[in-house]
Length: 557
Image (cartoon, rainbow, N blue to C red; front, top):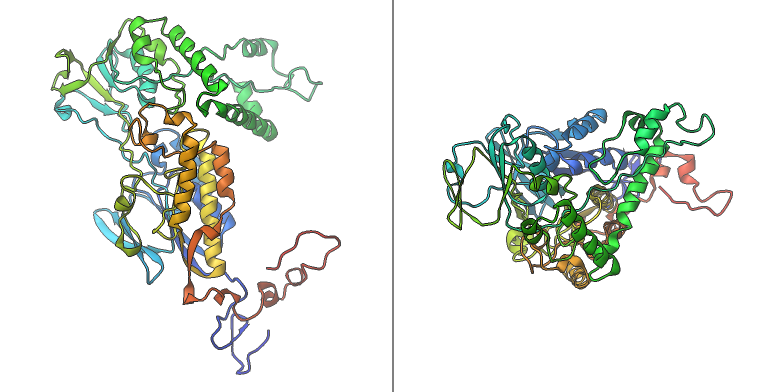
């Protein structure tokens, strides 16, 4: 160890007046708060353990269990994932974030959290908002809704204890939740009334991707141990009839052969992704899929004169996110199902009254009416200069790549406005956004950055480009969708391109798009006392990376 002239040393560094006693780019410690413990919270915890050092992390989750938006859907997967990788140590359940206020002098967010009726304050260098767009479900605004005496259910807060067998049931809505619920209720209800106000495309069940069991390969290379009867059953499945349920031998094949499973997953993703051309307005693919969908829906509705007229849209396929709707159209034409197209004017203790004056007496009401979709967070967010994001983003958000907001430093949104919301698989976008946040954290650590604030003019130019793209996309068709804030002609808040196009865009951060403020107001403080980590550690390989047998890439640590 090199000793300073006065004989003292700090962490192996010679003291040097006016310079930090650290090695070149030594990471400073960061505290990170992630709001939510759903898909992004757990992924962030997992990835940070493997890609980041010198940090503290806490995931504040308002619910009593992990899962977030996915709580009622694939929660067990998240529970198993968290248990397998010991991630619960990063999570605090039943902790609701109430507000986050940027403190310029500290270069941190002051976060107010409520737990068990009491509030406390936390601080963080980076705030990750994974609370989600579809975070708060909503009741429909109908007079007398809560006067109803029977069970009143919402699709996002399902009560499995309610028995609908033999009951008269009303389902409100034609969105994705209603499309999933209706076929199941129809099977058990004595009479089902579907209150339907809008048209929607119902795609056929996705064709099953066959699992390659290696039949016909040389003995020992395939699954030749499976009996012929099972294989005949396998070959006779009709992929157009309904949702496919994997057979035990297929599950075993995928479970025991990671390469087969990987190839199978890639093939499914490829088949979905290569259909993106349908989202280009007036393209041959768009026209073809519209003709096909009309034919399919008419066939499945058995050319029902009223339903074909009231349910099949005129706007382009894909203007709203497609829903497969297995069994939905078939359920609508069952004898115990009635269709109501008039607007509901009032709900009474015994049922529903529609605008045409008719009264519909029912035993159970199911509101499949979705979420209170908000582009701004459900907590108060105050950025630089005391600006509230609800004011800053009114009437429409000005968001950078779906992840950052001008005037709100060190703040990363998970799948915010202009993210990959309209097509493809959402989880790869989440993963890439988390990795973007980790890269930002590393940049802040190594360069001793206090605040990174995306530039307003850069964000404006990006969104002009996205607006231009949407002029030729189907999402600008005349449908009402949450992409356009539940309007027909509003600004489209999706990315201008495919989901893979979006992921490629955020894979490489462009730090020149940010205004940067440094610790100590010194952009060169990270140079420290004049040595590298390898020199401080006296590490042979780290001190000689330039000496090598061939012209291979090298770097100094």
